Length: 239
Image (cartoon, rainbow, N blue to C red; front, side, top):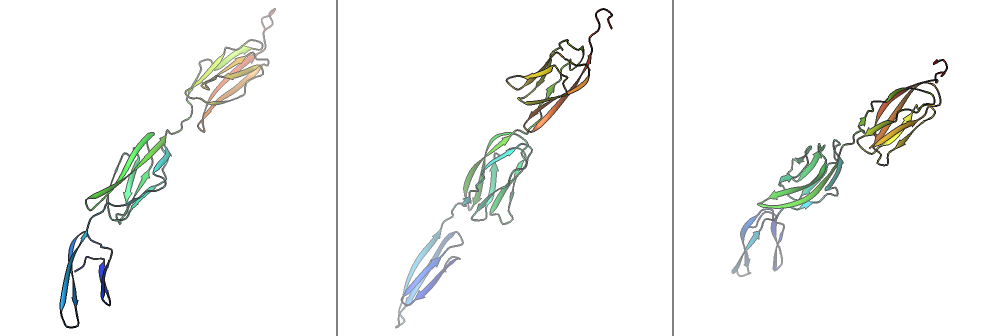
């Protein structure tokens, strides 16, 4: 009586027991040798099959690098036997699915929070368990710079008179693009990239619509303003 997966073979005077046991437990077996005169000798033995913890294969992408609001690349952990799984430490928005055969688990989803998260996957079978640890590096979702609009973004002024400096501030370091300023006006960007100042003295008359675009993380926001610039009045006539 041998355990499942183990068999006996006889080659002449040699009896061989071999195989891979498929069940856990203790099995007593007997080998009976009979000679040509009908005499027998019996040898008894025991095969003890101990439980072993599931072996988890480690995927290459146990470190999950993603951006808040963007779906991750699925991460699959496989085991060598049917197991139950426990996963702890995943950020909000991530979850997992267990395969129908109970031999793998896949982490999926779209993270809804940014941060550095340590997680673990535990596979349990036959009263034993194995654990693999991983890491989630979730970057904040990019947002466009927020512009604090100046109160003097629209001005009426004469040619040759300096404008009131226009300070446009943003909440993060940005690149700026300015279009539509009349001749004589220019701009300077602060060293920290969080503000821009339009200044100068217009040298031409007319109505001018200008825009200031602040760009960061591939996104942008735009402030629009205008100038109404008139020719200077004749001091003698006031016209």
